[in-house]
Image 1: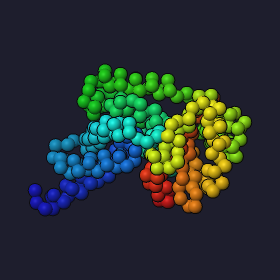
Image 2: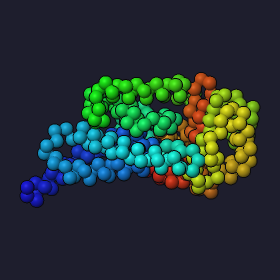
Image 3: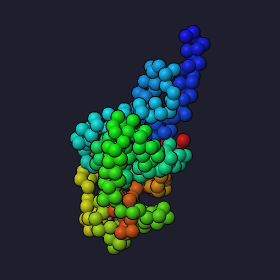
Length: 298
């Protein structure tokens, strides 16, 4: 191959990778719950794609998807050990979905913060099977090939993931009701309004504050309507007065960015059903907040 042929080949490889990139990122992000780790997976996928005998690859997108999915599973397996030593509750890293509401997928499945949090309880292979099937609509046969397993086993993996999510999460409310509940919750949290908080929270509500040990966030989840209400009312006088709030979109849903003196302090989002707000998620770790805040300016 002469220099011109090599250059043309690399140009085609670049175009093929860039065309697949949104989907590759969407898969890796859903499996890992981390935009930073997903970017690392994409970088390694690109390196491997460059070093592949591409003349033997009939379907570049399928080949790249296989590489990215397998790499994401490997990273998820090692990340699981790291997250066991994570200080306080771990929450997914938020992503800005204004320009890509489905984040590279056929459907926006497995993109909400609450769903990503629940998927974290599955093993990485189950997670990948669910993501490939439910968000990207891959046929079971192709998912099985990517995961190097049988089609019947793939169906079982997806079925277990579905059952886990349905057992852990009730039917969410409409987008309009979700926004309304978050508005009511925010106003009550800012004023420490116990009665309103108790009315808007589900009986089994859980509040997660992911500070990564850096900020003064609760290092254990706060569970139950009364405990969460008291917790929110107790820290309202010192948390909210210096803060400013901005409505944003994160992971396909409404969220509130809290800043103080121009610096990001927290990203607040909730998971809501007909019973009320069931999960309150405060992303406070600066390493997770900074990339998200930067994306808002793009």
